[in-house]
Amino acid sequence: MAAGVITQWEIYQDQYNAGLAEKLAENLDGFNAASQNAIRLSTQDSRGAYFEEAFFDLNTSLIERRDPTSLSANADSHITQDSIISPKITNGIGPIGQTINSLKKTGLSEQEYSFVFGQMVGDAIAQDYLKSAISALVAAIGTQSTLVSGTEASPSSLSHADLITAMAKLGDQADNITCWVMHSAVYYGLVKQGITDNVWDVGGMSVKSATTATMGRPVIVTDNVYTNTTGGVTDPLYHVLGLVPNAMHIRESEERTMVSETVTGLDNLLIRFQGEHAYNMTMRGFTYDYASGGAYPSAAAVATGTNWDFQMSSVKSGPGVMMQTGLAAPA
Image (tube, rainbow, N blue to C red; front, side, top):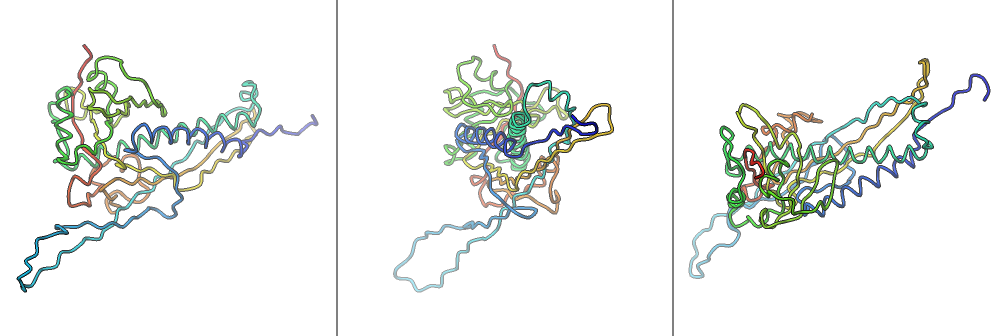
């Protein structure tokens, strides 16, 4: 090699995107099916700082009794038109610095490494989707007292009866609950035996098949920080969610970007990767309050209940229910 010529090492976009797309699609398709679409993950381009959808909500009964002999005036019923605002979450990937020497020692070509790196990013994105979804659901449902069971001050261990109590919060719509979300400690304390199989794994989260112990509904088992907190209580407080279809829809809304550069002037040549991506969060029955939480919200803003406003006339039209429970240790 001629003196002064630097060996370039770069991310090959085609291979990187192929690895990312393969892993992301694998995670999304499998998770959507396993969770029965309670938390939906998809891709959909959306410009601007947020995504807005209009909806109609009937405040009174659409059908009423009519007296065929009467000529009395009849007051108009009305339909409320409003909108659901879905915030856009903007994330960065890296920057990640790695010496070219260390990459060469892996034995992978630039194209192969680009594909593997894309798969790693795909897993990380899927995990972030779920973390954001769970944090927002716990925060928003927590603002509706009629959807929450259990006490924060002295949480008791979760029982099968507690699941029924939570389902009853939705009255005649209780059967709409299609899956549970809970911490692994709570799940294994409830089931007390490893009788289920993992049907999908997303970034460290596993979905367990339905059992009698869970009222015939699958369970998303995750040790996500938002399912467990010790805020102001002696014993750990766990949040268990019972979700209906389309409780949360996460959709990738901007084209993913990844660039690389070679850095010189150091003892070893360095390659730096950096990328960007964005997604919108749509929660059933709730709109995001930009006046309170701000545009392009942080993780903390998404996980703040006062930043989510309930828009429907009935809590039965919301994303589901929540239980505040303690730890039930396996026997």
